[in-house]
Image (cartoon, rainbow over all chains, first blue to last red; front, side, top):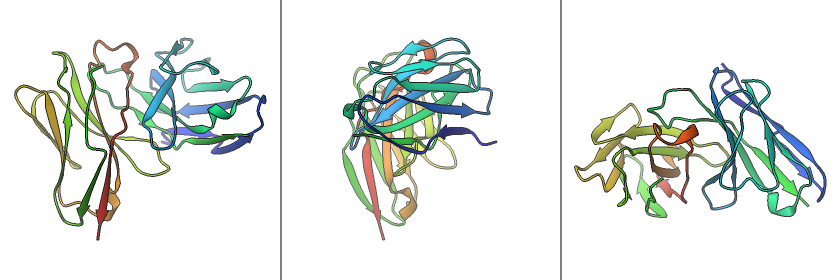
Length: 114
Length: 113
C-alpha cells in the first residue's frame, strides 16, 4: 500500500496562474481532507469530503476549490494563485469508524507563489 | 472543538522520559483526546487517542485524570529521532461531522544527545 500520495511535491507559480494538486489514497477511505501549513503554525483545514461526490468548506476555503469525482482521489485547485497561498499543502484521509480521529497524511506539496 | 493549551517548546536528553501536558478546561462529555506527531517536512502522524484514565500503545502513553481537564502524553526513553512537534487535539469524532481536526501550534520537542 502506498497510503496517501500527493502530486506534485514542489511547485512555483506566478501570481494569477492556476494549478491543481492531486491527492490519491489506496486505503478505500471515505473521508479526505486538504490542509495548509504556514511556517511556525499548525495545520489549517481548507476543504474536506465525507464521500465520493461530496465536498465541504473548512476553516480557510477562500481562493480554493475541490472535487471528489472518484473515491480514491481528492483534487485541490487554485484558480488564480496569490502570494498569500504560498504554503505547504497536506492531504489526509480517514476511514469510516466514527470513534477515531486517526487521519493518514500525505508527504505534502510545497507551493511558492511569486 | 475544545480549545487546548500546551507548552510551545520542551528540551530533553536521550534516554529520558518526556511528559507533555495539555490543558483543555472546556472539554465536553463526548470529546476524545488525540495526539499527533509531526517531523520536519512531513505530514502529521497519529500517535494515540483516549477518553479517560490511561491508554498505552507501542509508541506512547496517555494519562487522563478523572476531571479530564488536562492530559499528559508520555514518551518513554526518548531518542534523537523523537525530535518533532507534538499536537494535542480535543473533540468528538462521533458528533463532529467529517471528523475534522483543529490543530493548534503544538509543542516543539527537542531531544539532545
